[in-house]
Image 1: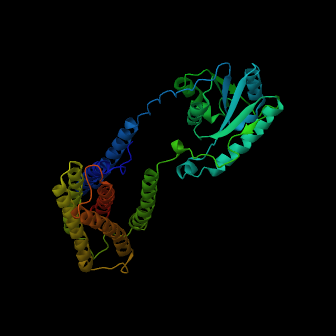
Image 2: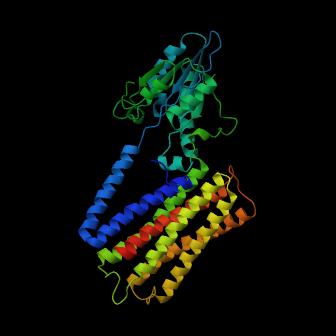
Image 3: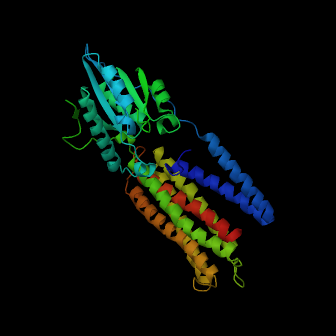
Length: 213
Length: 196
């Protein structure tokens, strides 16, 4: 739905719609109270239905331009947040990085609440993401993996796109909680990433509740 | 050795994820206005529906016809406002000046009529709950009209001083958005307070 106050033209059309809506209710209400109620209900349902139908999903964004890695170097982009220190993820990174000349970039999206996002209050989210990232990098270092890291956008897809523009990964690893507990899986982040980016994408499930992992 | 790129300096702001400042401002404005008018309408519905106060409370009555004429005046002013902006978008400066002037005069007529209505209506905000709610809602809207007229006055003066062009007319667009919003609120107020 278009914000009716984004432009004068939109606001003018919104005014005309409001005029018709209330005029119909008022006329019916003056004739008969119950008729006014019926018109109110019918029009309101109609408006809600029209609004629901007019909500069109955003067109898929074009695949990000991927910078080519230097000859002989393999670049792996890891995107994870709460699961960033999970053993399955670390194992996957170790396997991918075992092949000699490999660079690993770990991106920890600064997950934020919708209200804070709307108010551009990102500092606490970035600070928390940074803490997780630092712990993850320290863990990788202990396992002998050369890695750098950065805090990314709160939207994981946007964080991947941002990282691809500067890092140019050959492979992407996305780490999530298991199905049913993962907000990213519910939002289809992994499948959207596969559609959006022309880079092999590995999905690692980390069950933080599983002590063996 | 593992490194963290952001350690030496503050992280670069991710503009791609932030809400545009003008959009955010408009959202906050809408939210604050919804809460403001919503609180007044809550009182209105409480007084009229929950408390069962007769509306209007006898022996008073509301000047429905005069307010109806005022509604037509205000809605007409939205058309002239829209005309003014469309005119400058096509480079028609005469249309811009005429549209803004007419909008200002129509808005002023609305406000003066409202003040005249107040002086003759026969009750005050102190009379009873009905009077308090009536003056509260219509007065709140009147204050918005006054703000809108102030914005329109600036825009009109600037138009006569040669400001605005086909490309640069944000100074007309923003008052126009606000003016339409004020009109929308009046339609809601008129329908609920005067007619239903």
